[in-house]
Length: 565
Ligand code: SF4
View 1 (tube, rainbow, N blue to C red):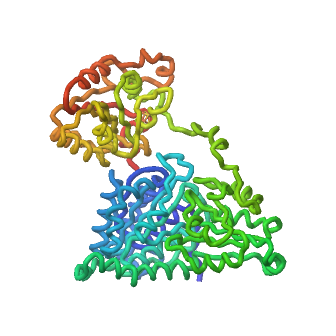
View 2 (cartoon, rainbow, N blue to C red):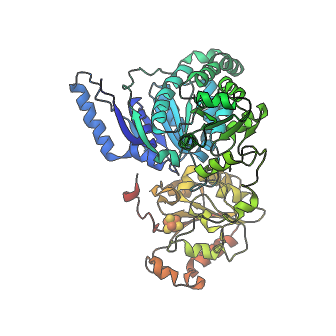
View 3 (cartoon, protein in one colour):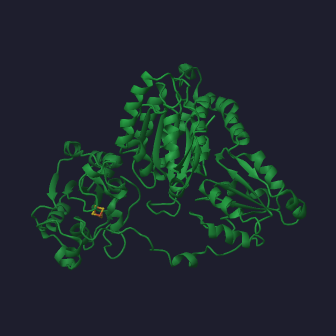
């Protein structure tokens, strides 16, 4: 029989696995690096293909050629909401997928952790995009730790075929254990290419939620979880062929036994890098490799055997020493903690460096001084022709604390603008400003306001905080690629007594939308908008809370219509 194989990227493999798993609902929140994965689900041509295929299914004689099922996919503004909608789908017997970036895990962690002992219905998987190297993120967080705290299985696939099989298996495992499953990806994995072998489309009828769990109290449910469910996850990690060992050739084993046997344990995309390096077997003939695609629970027995067979172990993983920290007590283990590899992204040359220095207990290549040269490299900056430049320039001249947010305003924090002082998380500006000793300013984008900033505003109004809130309304999530930002001005006007609107593009100070070149020739004083500056000063002098909506058109993403991926 002809094999159904195809060449695709890591993200396309996940897309196909979701279709073949009969996923009904996909929810997500935009962000780097998962936008291009969600785009596959939102793509109009795919949807047309879905509708056409449903018609074909009715006519066909149950042919396996027809693989595509109907689904609904949507961007949302908040990860907790995205996950909760998915929970609702799961409870009613529909398989669901949630796609978020790593910081999104912090937001959805609350319902996730409870859902594990609460139990769910149909399969529910979270695909989380980590950003080792922080190329498009505010931090370099490792989502695999959420597997530990939530006590869920975490897949960390290394190539498209493993990712396809991992997602297919994740839905089965989720339904068997009645828990959500996490699958971690990175940008490098998403772009990686390879052949996948597609399996027959799932014929399973997804289960609905079983109400009988309410017979037990929560402490009992947690005990039951540990005696009945977690062992299933541990058995999966120990027995899956996705966690595989590639031993050194037999004759090399004999030769090196007890002297210089080296093993590498890796997970995720780093495993593909290790595999490529080890293909140079003439140089690295003495090295065995344990490639882990399920990293929580860790397959401790499998790792124990691997440890016993190797004198020195190198753990190669992105972003944090997640595996390394759990096993380093067991023997001579090198990795990030010993300075052999950098934190964050791991490149092929880093692994080769680590192998060259494997006999040293500690190395110091990745020290403070080595990285200080890179401290500002690749940092995002405000566009030269951004409509909000007059605002940022003015903010840099006044002497009050200014809380920025995780939209473009965070890019105004560093020199030469030095406008906002702090920026902690998406939607945080208003609550942070609420804590300032004296009246300060919160600068927040419209997407961040809808994400969670509105809760901060509600609190600020309820408790009578003293502050000026500047809402940058450009109708798009400019920081994450120009996705639509909802307009919740009516809600803001309902809860806040003093709301003004200032159109930064029309008339008052800036007569027309200027080109990047025109802006580039202006001095700081020429860019300042006196009308806007005066309005801010006036509102700052008032007691209580004031809101100014600053309407402007993002020069990079323009209107939503052409960017509504
Ligand atoms: S992306 Fe848009 S909103 Fe952000 S700095 Fe550039 S022009 Fe301004």
